Amino acid sequence: MNKGRFEAFSDGVFAFAITLLVLGFTVPMHGDAKWPTDADLTRELLKLWPNLIAYALSFAVIGLMWQNHHALFRLVARVDRKTVFLNLLLLGSTALIPFVTATLGAYPTTHAATFLYGVVLSMCGTSYNLMLWHLVRSHAFDESVNARYIRGTVVAFRVGWLTYALAALVALFLPVVSFALYITIVLYFVVPRGVDKDLEPSRGEM
Image 1 (cartoon, rainbow, N blue to C red):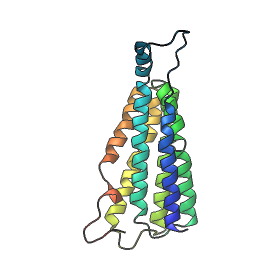
Image 2: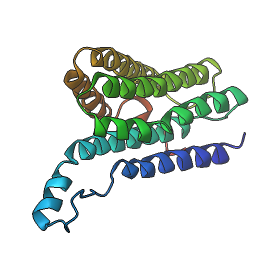
Image 3: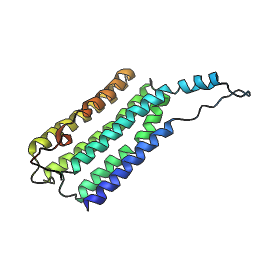
Image 4: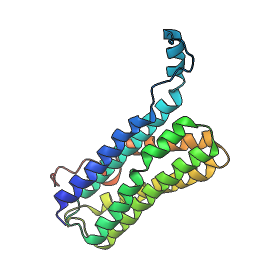
């Protein structure tokens, strides 16, 4: 497949998913017959703080996923059919993030909501690791790519996947701790790792 079309389609799904996150917010409805006052509306808006935290978390998650995807495929020389299939699994999991984010925002301290969130992120992590494993095994990276970058990416992706899986299990017992683990993995990927690091000056831009 033409790599440009492959990346353009992936970018579109990431952009669509990150846009859908805002649907987790709904305009507060006042049940009383009288017109709500400013104080009434303010109280209702303040009740949306869990939705705001869930939105910020998922915005960061999808943003980092898109960044990692871009950093990975700028160094890939060719895209085969299996890569496309594994990428579709990743994008399918990513498209579920807005739904689980809305659920987490509505029920932030429940076992079910935090567990479901972790399951979807673990699915994303699994797809990422399977795709990276295939790219490494099929020697899909450009020959000039330093193996150090690839090894660093493998380690980083495995840490992310294991942390998401652990957070999902912890959610069955301690939802708040699970939420903290989701934030931790975002902070972990904020620091460039593997192919996400700036290329060496002699390497040039792909």
